Image 1 (cartoon, rainbow over the protein chains, first blue to last red):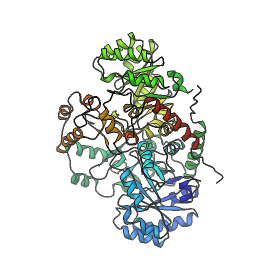
Image 2: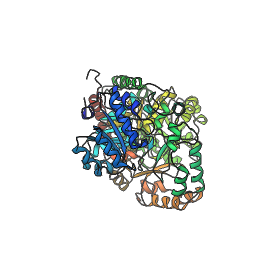
Image 3: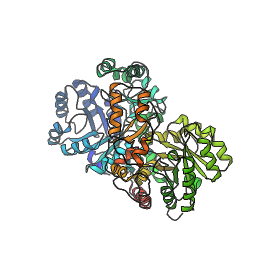
Image 4: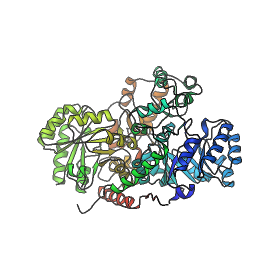
Length: 316
Length: 316
């Protein structure tokens, strides 16, 4: 038991990230049934679709699960209505201002975690009353903070500056990297990319294969003028690059991005025109596995690596 | 003992980074005398100045020390001549092509480590016959790789792809982050920023205070069109930013950079016009300490954090 397993009522201090077009009820319930916190990614769901996934998830697991809500979601009030009606017990918020929504949820007994990427927002989240923060580093896939702090530097900085539990995210996919995060002072980890290409993820098989075959240097953080996003390089990225090379502005970038690019890439498997969001750690993810195998492998590697850690012997 | 302590003949698997305008004989010999590998940073030294520092370092310590050589150094052959004449036993090379220089050094019995930032160059270094690589992540200060891989993602990727020992660099300043790097599979660590502001560093006191007072988000990786470099934000950075905002090119950036910017910032303490190179991890470095205290603190924190690491108990 530690602060995070106790707070969330889970076996291992691991959260499966709520990722757009990946994290439906199949992935979330499989994660929850295997000892970690399963999370539905509401960002890619219409309100009634979210309700359906919550109801299916409840039927598929008796263990705790959460919903991830990006606070810039257009029909945000409708989403919260559904969370309250369906009595969701854990909510992870990201983007936006947690002080607007946290107290309402806390009054209903909901546990709240908020994603941050620097000290300033970590303190705001703590002041807003969240139960824990998720500190997400520059290496993470999808939307990303502007300060570009990496997990290795961000986690100890946040641990030094706030008093509530800290979950590390970004670059974590194995027992080894989970152990690294715990060494840095994290109370738990959030794992995205490895679950994004699990069997139970709703991502397209072509996207999963593309990730499996990607190497270091294949992802890039771009579109910083809009909202920084990490994606795999492809034709769509070449078009972005061409705009930057000729000199561009927000309007042109927004027009090129258009609508539905992430769905096209991750859910429909259009590897060239889609936005293929994934973390840098995809470089070491080399197969599509079941959620059960992934979690067992992470736990076993964590314990083995911990036992074999180099010990400094001052008598040498 | 592990691969790195054995290879380098040192007590702790820690390398003090050879940093321009910081790593003279005072810093290097203090590091070597306290159980880690001291390193002279030749990048900011004329050949005869390097010779002087090597000779003073030999007098100040009976322990192994190394010289760091950027392979793009203009009078590179002259530098190597001095290394050979002075019988330097360990050389760390960075930038450039290790296949041009490594075999010569190996024939003379010199141990060679090469700094890399992706798998491609790690394999080239291994093929060139180096004894170990230093895998340096995006969070590191000073010059930086183009792929922007963070230490958390880079280290396991390199460990997975080559067979020689791997030293982790970038974001490491404490016993906790050293433990994180060892968890990721590194055989040792290179620590820069914390030694850059140690008492024995030749950096200016104003630079040291500026680093002590800096926070997360205060460094930035910029000048990517020339050679990417991480520095603290200041007036000089504002001038760079102004060029980017109006649209710029290599020539303008080169002109703005001019010559001697790093000396001006780090050695002369001109905080506004100088190039203040330092790593992201400066966010958690809060005091100027002696090399001895730094090393004792890192070793103690490493062992304490290791003993207290969260253990997964499957019976919970």
